Length: 377
Image (cartoon, rainbow, N blue to C red; front, side, top):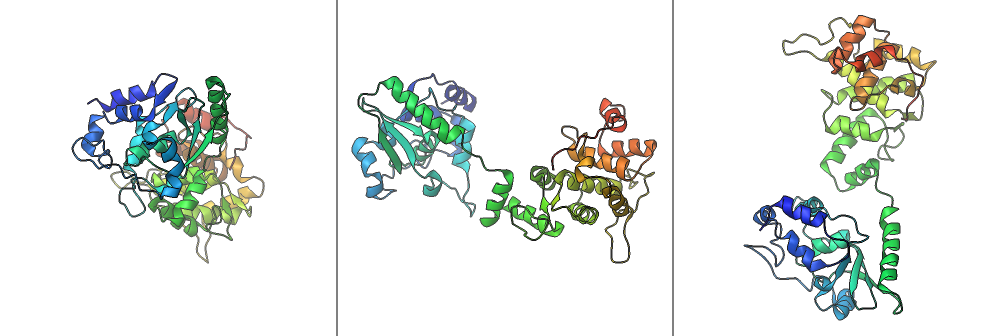
């Protein structure tokens, strides 16, 4: 048995060249803490509890070619580490722990696995050139015979040229593939009712904005990643501030897209003015601004000021000078300075309430350095 860190190091530093898949499995199952967790119990490799291989998981017509070429299935296959990505133990463990839609163990899923790609070299060795990790997940879930796409190298091809061709197609299929954006993950999460996606959708509907057609007929919300972090990491006292910010922003600008950084920054501004310290005193006692969400007979001071500001400025003008790690706080300060016209003393009060250090260069940069640079929505 070995520590997980030792196993991770062995996997991370596998020598370049050919490795039999089952030998890599033998390294992984040495991780003592994951044996105790029972992550390998669904295969023959569990130390205390284990199961035999399920060699009939797929219909015979799907695994026929694999069985004919390699009688022990995935145990007979190889991986060429020369061109494969570094194998990270944490990624394997995350997959083994993954839950299905109903909260049970996902185990091995046919739809997720799809088909792994194997190239048979002239010497008869079969190399998994795409689907290396899926094969590991399969074996550790007791599946030796899975769905594969098998191609044979030309019999006259050298081993070096086989490796070159495999590396070439591997790079095209993986290195140049388009990863899913956070917006796309949110959209698909709604379909299978992922908790975080539904939480985001609720706020999006309340804000009367749209993200990838999930709330059509409304302005599109930009900077989705910042919005997602603001909601899920609970960077505001309430998501009601995002709703208020959206309505005020839409009242000021009639653009088809709401600049997401401004939405979140405006929400942070409203939230900060409402906050109190442990003794119940306002964090910004000298900034007396009517921020309440307007009703039919009233328009709050922030909304009035935004409408005036919007006549000569773009939304993105308020998103300049964002500081790393404090993006929405920076925008909130810009609103106080440029829209609300706060005095210098009020600006420093707001900066302190937003979490900036009172004597930091960052505060001086925000208060003293003007910019016309407009940042992306």
